[in-house]
Length: 256
Image (cartoon, helix red, strand yellow):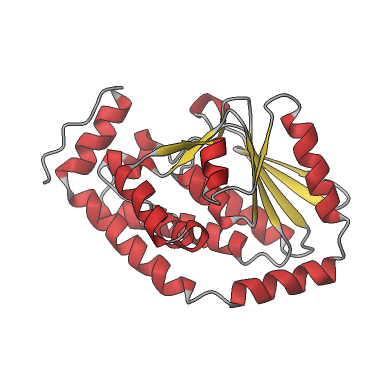
């Protein structure tokens, strides 16, 4: 049914696995479209959603740089909008959503995790928003959600430096709530999901609705992010940043 996703329904929750291990589960337009289809289908009878990545290395290592490198601004805006639509749906999901971060959660992977209510990370994993090293900024909601979760100062530090964090560092600043040992990560993480599922669904719905409604307008923040994300695809630095990434070298930015 899905080329890039695995969807497994349990009694109390649904597990959605990004299934591109050869690309470290990187997100492209096709993956985002499939995620949107899953959310539309699951929305008919919502349950707790659990997101994870296939394999041992990556939750989602980011967006697909090879697919992005030569995008026009219009194509970049389309990609940004697709990501924002999906992640906003996850943010607004009526029941809790959980990111089981079993490996790299960088760029779009970090943004997917930020859209979720709870973030459980493997001790050996890394998380962050390194888009600035590619000559762009986060485009799937990172500038908006990161600031809400860890505060403006920390969000500026991570986005402007492109720094990636180890699991314990991420826990310390509130980017994730729980760190679990690499051994038996899935088993221990799903125990927590089962415990969450044992709570009354009506209470969970009410808690999430009230907590989300206390935030300032999300839509305007996402629109602004999308505009700047797309504009950066007119720059030489975007081309250089992504070319350097694919060539496994440091970028030589010219501020053009």
